[in-house]
Amino acid sequence: MKKHNFYAGPSILPQYTIKNTADAILDFAGTGLSLLEISHRSKEFQAVMDEAQALVKELLDVPAGYEVVFVGGGASLQFCMVPFNLLNTKAAYLKTGVWAKKAQKEAAMFGEVVEVASSEDKTFCYIPKGFEAKVPTDVDYFHYTSNNTIYGTEIRKDPDVKVPLVADMSSDIFSRPIDVSKYSIIYGGAQKNLAPAGVTFAIVKQDALGKVNRPIPTMLDYRTHIDGGSMFNTPPCVSVYGALQTLKWLKAEGGVKEMERRAIVKSDKLYSEIDRNPFFKATVEDHEDRSRMNICFVMNDNYKELENDFMEFAKSQGMIGIKGHRSVGGFRASTYNALPEESVDALIAAMKEFEKKH
Ligand SMILES: *Cc1c(COP(=O)(O)O)cnc(C)c1O
Image (cartoon, rainbow, N blue to C red):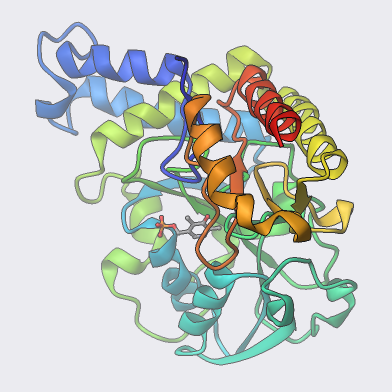
């Protein structure tokens, strides 16, 4: 039985990435050595790092004045690196989920935090309307989470605000074009839509750095990683290699415009079935707020007791990783770039079959 991988992260990667990384673990770039045992200072690995950074810039149309860095520590370390490097007096945060909340908590250690709006009152099942107008103009930056992985909400429009933007794009990077010029920093853990776990990406506007008065520990200073070409210390070589493979795949498949087209096709299909099928309902009601990457749904009110039955049935049909996050319950189908449309079709077929059987 074919397995359909709907895990939220680490999550499905292109076969191209998996195959090429496996090959390089056996013989890296014709060196006769494994990717696991080569020096990161070798010219062959330097080429991997350089190409990965260049491809991020190319695919996202990153303007001059920005650098791409690959570091460790996950998106969670970025929660503190961002304020360490950018927050002088005051920053604004939008609270749309636990990741957003964790980012906000770190910032509060460095200065005043203005909570622009929150959707915590309804388990983060919506994006607060009109948040852009509420962002103060005297803050150092405005931070938001573009895709709320746990709750299945997404802000796809680069916000219109008068202050520099910072975004956690862990789970929707490379799923659509973005206007990088509006941002000071875009960051994310790579394990959702890009690479095996272990590497974190950040796209950093160089002008935005060097404006805070506090000393910054060397490893937490973006300038260290920019100046060192993401090789100040040993990078996670395998994850960076995996990222490069996905970036090459993205380019060959048609780039972020094509990923956006596919994401629209896949998510529209699945939401339509959730809305049509009387056994299910989406947890995010407002269509505008619905994520194209993490699609959350529960059993409809009259069928709550069938949740385990559907889980078991879906498993028997090859669905993996559709259990919703414990704070939301129900189901979550993550439909990242690498997920083929046929996996969405298989899930829809299982939902229809379940409806017939009951
Ligand atoms: C997964 C996730 C994180 C946490 O990433 P780590 O790399 O595990 O620290 C942060 N933000 C978002 C939006 C996520 O989806």
